[in-house]
Image 1 (cartoon, one colour):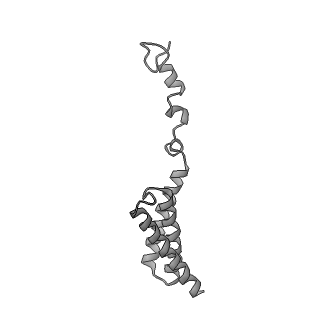
Image 2 (cartoon, rainbow, N blue to C red; image 1 turned 180 degrees about the vertical axis):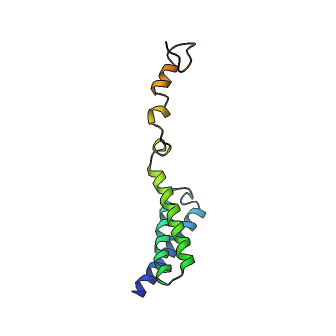
Image 3 (spheres, rainbow, N blue to C red; image 1 turned 60 degrees about the vertical axis):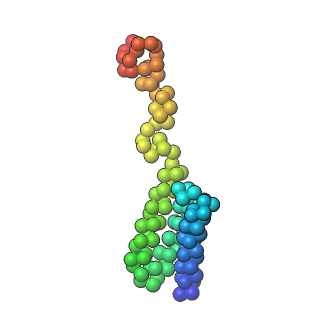
Length: 113
């Protein structure tokens, strides 16, 4: 078991180093999903290794890193309107209120005509 955990730890370190090197050399975007995914997977592997070796500060730090990566990736996969609670039609200006506002010249939004 110890050898497997050590291998997982080295894999995690390699993934984190790869993410940093690829972003630093502009091969991937630092704000991109690839960078986030590499960091999330690398941190998960290092969390396993750190927990096994009772290195709790490192395990907690990597757990936080996992949380950041997961939140960023979840936000990327969720449309902006859903995150804000705004219906897509309202964002495009096609809501009933927006249509009433464009009904005619001199009509203010919300006026009853």
